[in-house]
Length: 155
Length: 287
Image (cartoon, rainbow over all chains, first blue to last red; front, side, top):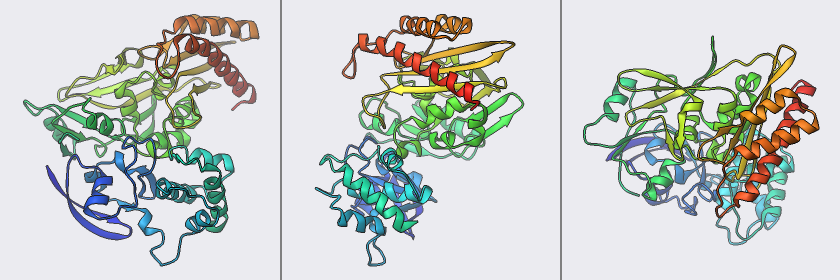
């Protein structure tokens, strides 16, 4: 079954024909070419596909594309749209909070959504906020430090 | 993923019409956090889903003359952050806050957590100690099922095809009620419970009533009337030890890849002690 949906992606209104059983992740990657959100576990466990839906972090692999109708989606591609890196991105680069980089877009989107709600988190709060984002290169310490550093910048 | 159709009805009439499409298996759909992986893995098969999130009242958290109404499509993070829920039903907020990750809690719903009926679900033990009732509607009528009769077995509930779970009604507890929900998992966050315990106490004259429910250690969440009776007799360390043993005896855990039966039973006792002590501490502090 095909649905014509209209929604916002990175502040631009788009209209797409999506299949009922396709996920938002599939639509973003394959129909809109936004491959920043990664296909990891497709089970809601790894967080590599994290995007913001109306400002809230969600796993794009666990949202049906058709459910995006009328909502606003933000992906990693929006973070440096102005041409300049987002403070979170700058902090990740500065602190080498990246090894293979696969988890990074999800980490950044989760952190962005979380900081919007809690601009001044403690280290424990950042750890708790990122429990749904797995890094298999085991680089958590630098990721957490980067989020805390960027929080000061964003706030 | 096996193809299925998706419908988003505007009202209940349309929803029930779709759910009762002759010759088709049609499921209600809310958060999708269980449905999408289960459907992709071919465990759940259906011809269509009916998105119930937009139906009237499904996302309400409301105080009613009876107590608290929480709509089936209310998300875990909405429950966890609700001041109304925290005011008298905090143990439910604690359960909701311990589900999955932020990403999951922004989608997963109370109705889904109940209807999936996973033994290790986090809100059912809280709903058990709070004596919730589940409101279930079909095309003809509406019924209320006490939480004690809602869960039938692993992934089996009182819900039939063609039903929509509307939400839960939770009585307002007596003034001075306190509760704790805690879970044990291999990893601190975003993991399934190996053992979970909800403890709840409220004054009854000069005495105190206790409710204790265990999660992940039987096919369905179980209360431990034996442990509750011991705690109602007293809450000194000796009583707490005995109650913990009684709770462990009530539990019927399995051995699986995550933990052995023996370990889970030991942990039921430990977690029971911890949940009771936490509840007593909350009561002592008045919040």
